[in-house]
Length: 69
Length: 553
Image (cartoon, rainbow over all chains, first blue to last red; front, side, top):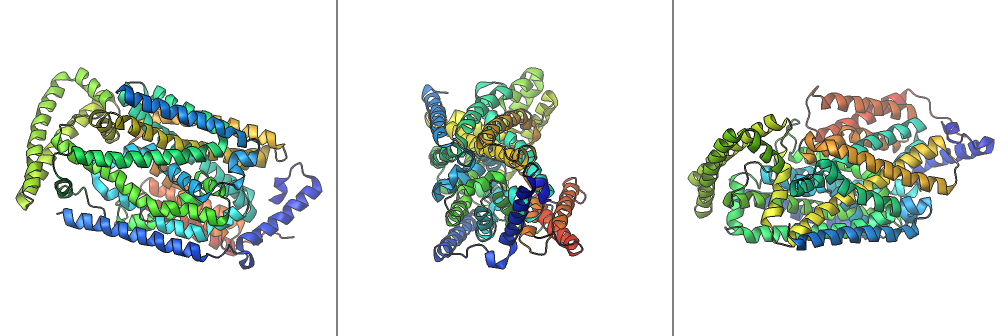
């Protein structure tokens, strides 16, 4: 597959690409290169997002249950 | 339309054009043109993400759907906040950290070139078509207002958008999105306020009347995979659809790839998680209020003015007979609605429902007649809000709302043209045709590709109007392969998955969704995403279990 990438790249181009290809596979699935963990700010924002959704859904539910007969 | 409304519209168009051209200065190399050198603040990216999703289809199709079907459609978005949270901790860090131009580029690094090319090709087809339907929505408004052909209306909208997208690249697209989003929210809020003020009954009575016709039913807990919008299809199918759309569709991925950091990219998505459901509720509420408004102010029998004119000319006697029946039915319905407002009890509600059914029966006959005379589906739902905007909003607000419809269309189309050009150049031109060309060649190719996709979208838009309710058309296009593409990205995060498994899984997922789309078996379209993603992951893992790992150096 990787050899298809660098049609004009010659041997070094191909080897370099193959090397970067394997490194990037590791980036994607290796536990040691896992995505940055969530920060306290992000977790706080998540809680706010969920709170806003719950409030919105409760309001919609109240609207439906109060007026729909 | 009043000259003040014209002035607002022209001023808006001029401002967007000039601002777009001003942004060309920072787009002289490919990274700047396609990714703004990854330098944009989270709030601008977040508003751009929202603006890209909120198109003129939302402003016309969804509001119309609110008038005919009530708040039920809101369930479609129930999975969005959850999807954003999941994406924030999974795909966003991977994609942003990989320094890629497109999401599909990433798939080649993980799997192989054919998986990348197939997903990129699907994106080009899917987005190219949906871009056309998005452009068609404001064209409906223009053809309704000015009596121009759909072709001319599409050109009036499409040409300025293509020009500023070609010249300014992603910088122009994002900053235009920010301003357009502000305009859209202002217009939605103003129309809700004005609609409430114009009603001859109190807001409480209006809601009671709407509620008695089921227009305020936002939750349907029935578990039925053939039902389009239920709580479960929205929550489960919607989560898969939103994850696929925001996490793997280049038109959205490209938005957050322009953010300064992973943290800022995550935060930009959370803006949608915060505001999408309340905003969408506001959009649907406009439709509900318009429905109540037309209980007291006589609406036309056919909202589509072109069809109305043709039926009137072709079948004058039949039209007149129906019009007389319609006027009588409207008068009865208006009296019945006032009855519900005065005394909300079972008898008045039943009388109101019976009167509404008589109106709908006559309208149904008129729509059938229009379809027979014109040979086209009437799609009257798309003309309800344009009629209200033109004839029932005060001077100034008409111009603002039409500018907002244009803004919504332009922001969505511009972002899509930008991303279509990116995928065309990065995933095909640079990948297969000229892998090591100078930066200037890719920049030139990106501009040509943007113009090409703009013309393609205009042609599709000209024919999309007769395909059915616009919102359903776009979402149907979207749901066909989104789930399968999401499945490939999910596989990419499983270490044991192999490239052969990913490719065969993708083909299997698409085959299953295509079969289901043609009714074998019949499943509502939101579930297509779940089916597609699950099929890809299951088939992909099974094939991977019997495949040899890719050679590593």
